[in-house]
Image (cartoon, rainbow, N blue to C red; front, top):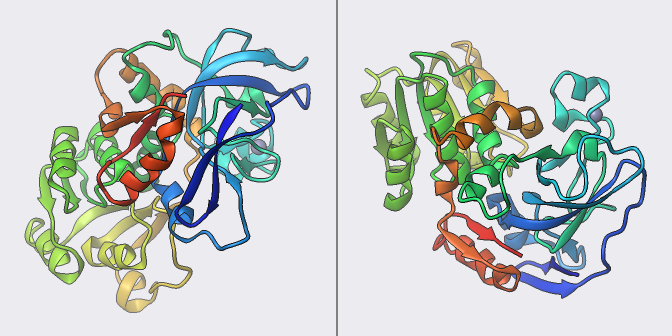
Length: 345
Ligand SMILES: [Zn+2]
């Protein structure tokens, strides 16, 4: 089959690899019908150390079950299914608490023995726990929105849930990438009253307004923080959802959060050290929340409103390609020419 491999920084190739086979009784084989490129794929695309590749790529996909192991009971051949971005067994003490990304048998697509989603097919471990059936056909117009349940929508939603967004909250969202925009949609869904989106790309912030942003701040750093404070009577917002992952974005979050508020981070931090002391978090009881999003927990919560047309998170896809176009898709996203690329293998 054909699969996407990252050989080094800037070097993505679609190559022939061995067809996946059932390796254990809990496995399923899934023929991928829709996948996508993630903002987090751009970190290794920008800076993968020489000699550490090649790596299978892709952690968001929908597909049709082709075969199942002897123990698989919740999905069968022919089912259309979505898989979450993180591999979990569904049975350990953390999975039973809904903390799937803390699974004691957890893993990542494209790491170790696991296939990547930007491919023609994938071996799915723990299939009963991982795969959720979709009650539509593979040609449904809802496919882009359903695909966001793998990662970006669930991750934006996790930011809002972990940040404690509730009816009447004021919220700042840092970042106008797909996760930031879906954090806006999520904050709106949870009843936020004021949603300030910090982003600089007009087409993206326009979509953010459509998703529920009440204000847009295009300035960054201290200037951006001042504008957020002007929009909030000088106090900042109850919750800041940080969907970028840089130290600069963290500092912006510290500047924009209200006293006794919460900073919730879902952008994968590209730093280990940042201020948490008296002048940043401690003095006014600011909480730091968020982390790797257990999107498996949110799939069934968020799916009904996609199916009934209430929300359309799939609007974050502005480009579509086949597998051969994946390398160009990486470059388009890295150049900010594409917000998010849908892949139809
Ligand atoms: Zn587990």
